[in-house]
Length: 512
Image (cartoon, rainbow, N blue to C red; front, side, top):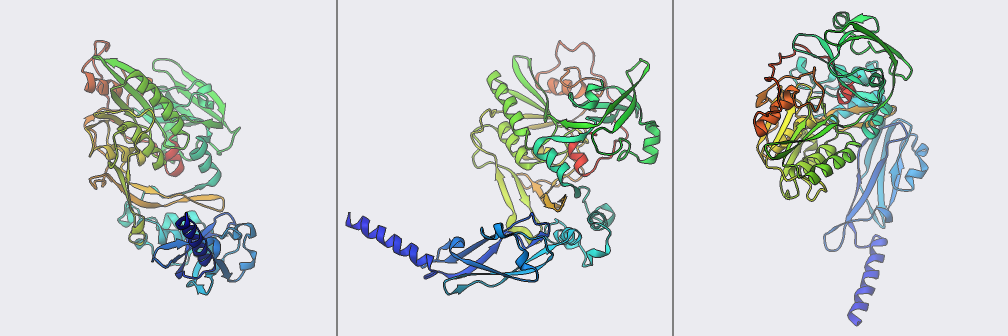
């Protein structure tokens, strides 16, 4: 009892000693960033640490005082400042110091920047190819978008960047966080004869409600033939302004039927990531098939629902169809990967982050999560992947190769072994390529795409989940052999000779 009282009293004295700053040395001020947009929204969070008498670094942020100097420092956000956070709407360079007792940190400078300067400085700091960004005055450019286009380390400069983008903040967040966007709600693809067809339609979208469905030939959009759209490079504008109520007129045709004129208005579309989910039984095996289209925040709930049904049904094999999945959140890819890998996954690395020389401290190896509810214990995986399969989808395929047999059915994928951090600034988001991604073996240089083990081209004439649809039928045959349910020989699909260009946020959405 006396010892307990002594220790309790000692603890109170020690806490008071730290509170007064006595016994703390080598005080340090650590901001979470040194560059912010001067939009009054981004916060710099500060942490103040010091070494105690035992040489352990302790957090003394709440006991310390932080001072700020610089032109306009008095216009900082007062509410944020009370929590040792800094927000400001004025551009400038601001100097910070922390004090505790008689200890004072060295000064730290934070720069609050306008739109153009912010994009330029982020290219100099977090961009994977930051060493390729020259010194220049960002104010000589017309816009942040022009800075990115001129400085992007792309193929013309001997680099690889096809993906860094700037987008509208509200549109980006609506899709990433809610799975919503304004548009028509369908995507298109060329068949092997060079004919443009509807490849996917969201059921509750304006296009879906108007009767558009997979396989229909597209003859014209808003009065322009497909040939006129191609020759004028009008894919980015042919559907009009990205606003609800904009009228879209199309002419489509079923094979062997007369052309049909349809008209509908753009609206807000809520996409489903798990677009199609089925369970087949072949040769005594239960085989799950999932067409998975986006790695966004709402995907997690959809995946949990689907995998709970697979687990309850006793699924033994999995076909994951990523043919139109252009990527998205790595956190969602990690969730899906952990559901596929199963519960016995401790210490197994899924993927690795590799940053530029300035940010090597951010490098990290990410293991699969253990104990996911609904997780399957699979011995192998089958992926359907095509030229639209990119980024997080490719990371998922590549990440499994060190751990189990993987078979890819389809076409060579897009080829994006890179990822980006997304930064809000003013009314926009900036997504610069910031890191390379590798699997547990360090493999990840698939800039030319992941080649299929079995080549089969997209069969846009059949609905998703139809066991006679080319890539799905081939995947089922790879698992269980030819089925007596198949009525016809597998048709040899011709390779599409062209594709519709999609960039930035549009590539992630994967539809118009």
